[in-house]
Amino acid sequence: MIIIEGVVEAFKLLISFDPEVYSVIFLSLLVSGLSTIIATLISVPVAIIISVKKFKFKKILKRFIYTFMAIPPVVLGLFVLLLLSNQGPLGSLELLFTPIAMIISQTLLIIPIIIGNIITSTEELNQKLIETCKTLGGNTKDIIKLIILETKPFIYMAIVLGFSRAISEVGAVMLVGGNIQGKTRVITTYITWTTSMGDYTESIAMGIILLIIAFIVTSIIIKLRDDK
Image (cartoon, rainbow, N blue to C red; front, side, top):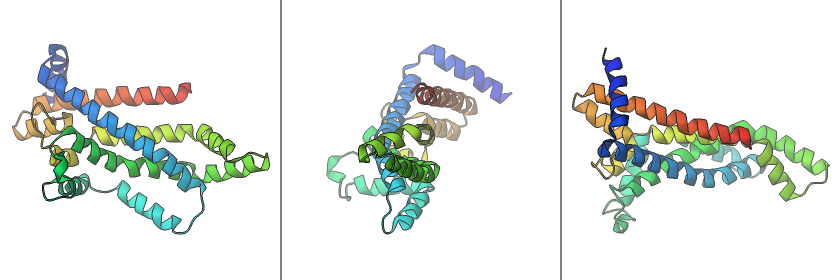
């Protein structure tokens, strides 16, 4: 069976220490990892502020966030492509078809995912925590500490969802990265390329490697959540 052949091929690729394969794996981890870190640093404080504050147009803002959670990656990739192209406002930076462009597109893609999931999971809880903390005489600093402590599991799971979306992304990174061998080729674009060439065994093998990486990284994040 072709699936069994793919499993065997995945094992061979990992133990062969092929420079091209490992450069693809490393770049996938680098791009997705940095995108997740940057998105987390932006998303967590924004999500907490939105979930605890009452302000005008809050409902509309949340609707926009939920809408962007489902934005097609190719649409986002097209936006970043136009932004970084020679005719775009950031064209002079010459970032198109580089890993930085891929990080930008993935970061923009997963920011609403992390924000939306945190808001959905914690908004009602945060309001109760604020009321409890105020009743006990807590100040703003105490409220923030309590919210972060009590909503930690939800925040970590939102980060897991963000990373999972980033590591599996293909449309946006293909557009802004170009799938250039040795430069911007990641696992998902590698799979797309080998599949178009009719090499289904290697496509399955790289797919299995992608699943293994996703499992390991998400397991580490969940372990950090449980240990803290």
